[in-house]
Length: 468
Image (cartoon, rainbow, N blue to C red; front, side, top):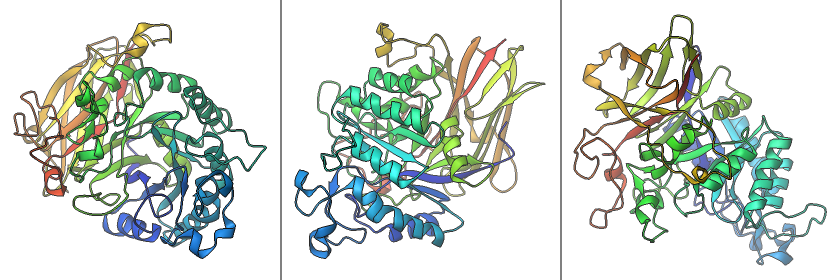
C-alpha cells in the first residue's frame, strides 16, 4: 500500500552545455523548479567527448591543459569520464545547496554498446559514475587510465555494464532505456537479455520520449526501412508503450518488473525544439521521504506514472479486497476473483482527460534465451478491458475525480495498467475508432508545440495480481 505518501514530478533525461545542450545548468534548473514546478531532476549529459565547459566556453580557449586523454580524442575535447568530476559534480553540488528543497541527481546518458542510449546514475559517488562511463560508454575512446579496462564495443560489453551495476550498486543505481525504438538499437531479445542479467538495475524504459515539440515528434526519424512505422511516436509515445498488446505488454506478460518513464531529453528550448524539463512531460514518483534513496527505490518498484501537458496532476490507482490493497508497481494476492478497482485523479483545470482506459493482460511463463518467444513483441491476451469517461467519475473537491467498481479478475495471474487522453475516439490526426493513438509522423502536418498540446496522454505503471 502506498497511498500515505505523495507523488512528485521530475525528469530523468536532461542535457546542458556540458555535452550537446544549449543551456547552462542554472537556466535548466531555474525553469524546471521555479517555472514548471518539478521536485527532482537527473542531469544526464551524454557520454563521449565534448568541447565546452558548463557555461558554453570552449575548453581550448579557457584552460586546454586540464584535458586528459586528448591523445585518444579530438584536440580541445574533454571526455565525459573526466568532466563528470571536473565540472559536473561540483556544479551539481552547488545547485543542490541552492535548491535545498529539491533533488538534483548526477547521472549521464550512456552510449550503450554497440548502439542505443540509456540514462544511468550511481548514487554512491561521482567517482564511481566517472569510472563506469570510462569503462562502458561506447563513445569513450580514452585509454589514458591503464588500470581501468575498456568494455564498450559489443552487446556482450553491454551485458558486462549492467552486470557491473548489479554486482556493485544494486540498490543505488539504475539503467533506463532511452527512446528505445528510435534507432532500432533495442530489440526484444536485447531488452530481455539485459533485464535478465541485472533485474535490480535495468528498471525500465523511456516510453514518453523527449523532443516533443520538434517537427518530427520525439525526433523519431532515423529509421526508414519497411518497418519504419514501428520507429515513430504515437500520441508522443514510443510504439513499445503506445501499442496495446505490444512489446511492453509482452514483457509485463512474463511478470517482469519493467516500468515506464517519460522525460524531456532537453537540449534546446523553443516551440519547435524542446520543452524545458516539466514544461510538457512529467514523471511522477512516489515519496514517503524526500530523499535520493527513496527516488531510486520508486524507480525500481514502478511507483510512478507519466503525464504530458499536465493532463492530470495526481493519480491513485488501486485494487482492493477485504484483506489487501495494491497500487502502482505492487502485486495483489487474493483468493477472491472479485476485487474493487479504484481510480482517483486530479484533472488539469484547462485540459481535462476525456476518458481513461483500463488495460490488462495475462501473466504467464518467463521466456528463456533458447525460446523463440524470447524475441516476442506481442501479448495477444492484452486488451482494453474498461473505458471510464471523466463524466462518469464522481467529482470531488480541488479538481479531483474518483471512480470505483467491483471487477472480476480475468486471469489467475495478470496485470492492469491505465492510460488516459484528452481526445475521444476518432479524433482526426490523434486517435482511431478504438481510441488508440495515431502515428505522429505526418509530412503534411509537421509537429510543434501547438500540435503537441492538442494531443495529451498519461500512462501508469502496472498493478500485478495473482489468485491463490
